[in-house]
Amino acid sequence: MLPIDRTARFILVFISLTATIMAMAQNKLYLTVGNRTMTATLAENAATRSLVRLLESEPVTVNMSDYGSFEKVGELPQSLPASDSRITATPGDIMLYQGQNMVIFYGSNTWSYTPLGKIDGMTAASLREFLGNGNVDMTLSVSNTSGLADVDYDKEEERIVYDLQGNRLAEPHTSGIYIINGKKVFIKL
Image 1 (tube, one colour):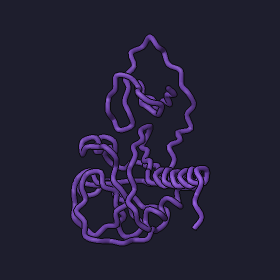
Image 2 (image 1 turned 30 degrees about the vertical axis):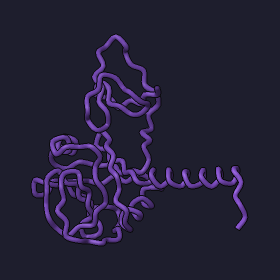
Image 3 (image 1 turned 45 degrees about the vertical axis):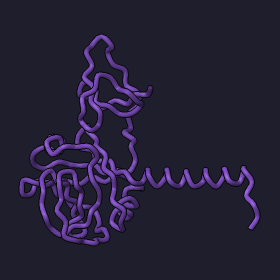
Image 4 (image 1 turned 180 degrees about the vertical axis):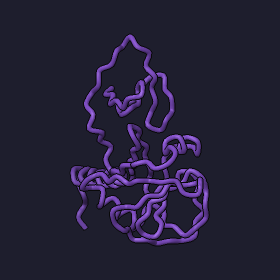
């Protein structure tokens, strides 16, 4: 085998890192209800790979309804490959039920599901608040684009700032999307 020079080694490392970063980017699901968005880390299975392929072309909106006072459930536009096993779901778990139903838990239940993912950093109470009561339309996407440009605001007015996980902040600390005085705002720092 021929020795690899420094340039070739750099190129190999760069390609490897790029592939890793791209794989990590596809590991997130963005869930939007109204003007609030939360993220979820996807499980690694055939169902999530199929879901990502579905969402790569465009976001999908799913009508979610309460069931059993512990979950929201909604029908996806197509069936995904199921690999069900008996699981005790906990708040924040996202599951596939019967191949075409997405279930988001704000309580707990034991049943046969295919894991789709886990909502990042949300408590049961914050999930209930995010998901609301009754039916909600939830938009699923694999990119964190909001379609919003920079928004000007009255600098004299008190700003009430929340991150996308619902945590109140004194000020935005990194570039990204925040809820400021009840409106979704992109901040570029």
